Length: 440
Image (cartoon, rainbow, N blue to C red; front, side, top):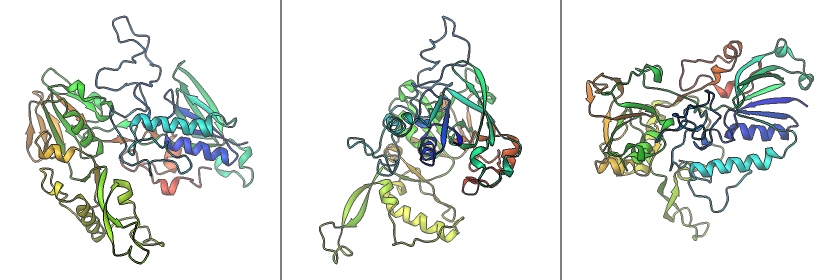
């Protein structure tokens, strides 16, 4: 039986392993955390620290060096803060063959998401004799074995094509094993990406006058920012949700927004056919219905067959999408200091937050349009277009993540995949390379 290494026990890793078993293969799942769940792993479920045992003056090993408001720096997976819920409803944020419990929240919390993924693993993987879990094991090298690219048809099941090396984080020992195949399911929410003036966190030289710097992946609770002045950098889901959350405790919250997305709440009103109407009347009789955002946006506007997929959008396509999203958002964003997207010949972006626009309109969250380009020694934030912001205690960078695949795939494999380490958004085209012809 062909054995396949699955790197990552998040959503994609779990479902891949389940279907590998269904295809008669034997998956071994490598996960650096103590449990399955990937990005939905709770911050309290941490890996064993790789550093020596702490001194009596240090935080206890059970706390794993967590400081208030900041998640475990040793944790390779958790990116969730207290109170976070999904921006997709349980009707679409699910596996097709594993329904949510009836009492699950419409927009599940991070804890509910983790429990859901654990239940899926328990049902389909934990009891299978074909599946092996390697928890607290971090893969650091995957390389193609000589001759594997020229395997003869029909001989695939007898061949081991890849060498996988990993570190057991609980014992700090390294191991190696050959596998017939490898599934990379390590996700994209791994290595924090920082504003362009910083290559990494270590480049930021803190002093008593400069604001403390953190990435959104470290944020855990608004309570740590009581009476503080906080700048939240970004214009995405995490930026708007963290700004809204932190306004509950902070004295001042400023959102530095480098762009303007369309901002939706999780529930939006839509016009739907009246269910009690007859078949002939349904086309003409509609009623106002409040739907989860994903059910409203994912509806087909025309019967099958749909419009053929396109690789890129024309300016006309972009304009139509902006017009449609504007019709759903309504007047609230138009009248907000955030404003609306201005260049509507570019692709539209959407952020989801129930409270952000209201808090901006009420003055509880300030919006500064621009990009953070530097922080002076006196703590002044330098913003594009010659703007500046002072008297800030904390900076929270909601600037996204970069993939980690280049950290463990061999240089030859990266070259075969045309992997671009410098592309923070799309280092490789998965639609082309999911099953690469040169990587059997």
